[in-house]
Amino acid sequence: MPINFPEVLDLRSDAVPYSWSDREVMLYALGIGMGSDPLNKAELQFVNEAFATSKPLKVIPTFASVCVWGARPGVIDLNRVMIVDAGREITFHKPIPVMASVTADARVRGAYDKGKEKGAIIQSEIVVRDDDGDEIVTILSSTFARGDGGFGGPSEGMPVPHQVPRRAPDKSVDIPTRPNQALIYRLSGDRNPLHSDPEFARQAGFPRPILHGMCTYGLTCRAVLQTYADYDPSAFRLHRVRFSAPVFPGETVTINLWEDGNSISFEGHVRERQVIVVRNGQTVLG
Image 1 (cartoon, rainbow, N blue to C red):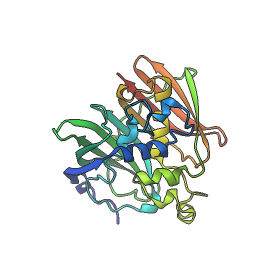
Image 2: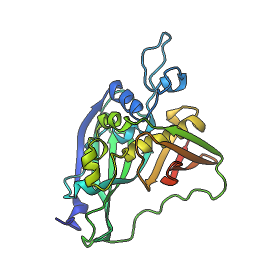
Image 3: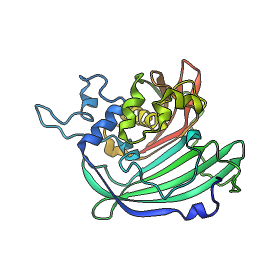
Image 4: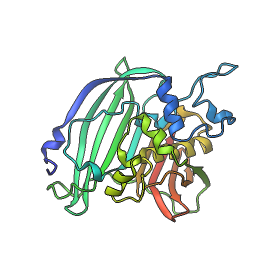
């Protein structure tokens, strides 16, 4: 059935409770490849709480993308086989705690019709609050529903994407992924079989399971953490990106970065296939 427009814009849910512990924090960090070198002390602080000399566990900023996994404004009747992530933008209002009980408010921000054969973009907003009602993060997610265009909604009005500089990058980081990385990352919440079942992936038009877009999102966060943030998650104020092509587990993602004051622009590509996989990336540090 087509997306019900404009009624879809009225979907929302408020104050839904969620919680997490250090287990979820470390599992997410492992899912995006942190700790692949178990002697790397900088990365070890994101995946290990047991040191001879006490060190606080750190939380990857993009853990926010899974901390209230399942939060949604309501049910939208989409073709599940044809759904992929289109982009994510997270605003950090305060550091993410290692353990927390929180609430999440979710609403549909927009529904954009690219045409019957071109699909649709659904944009949702989730605000995560702590026990005191203070905002921790605001998450804007864009879903590309490849099989759900032609519902009669607007074709324009999407937020303008960030433009990366045209000069040569200031830094470049190669981040390898493991062949089984999607099987680990999915344990943080997204169990879409597109990322684990070869037959389902073929039905969706891919030769094999693809890496979660949000796992690639985490890779871009790692790139900024190790280059411009000195592995300090509290420095992040905003992290956003648009996905342009899938990553296959086992590939190496090269992240090019540009520094302009406290704004770090980035773009990611897979050299083996000569394809750009993330565009319009920006981190704001503070």
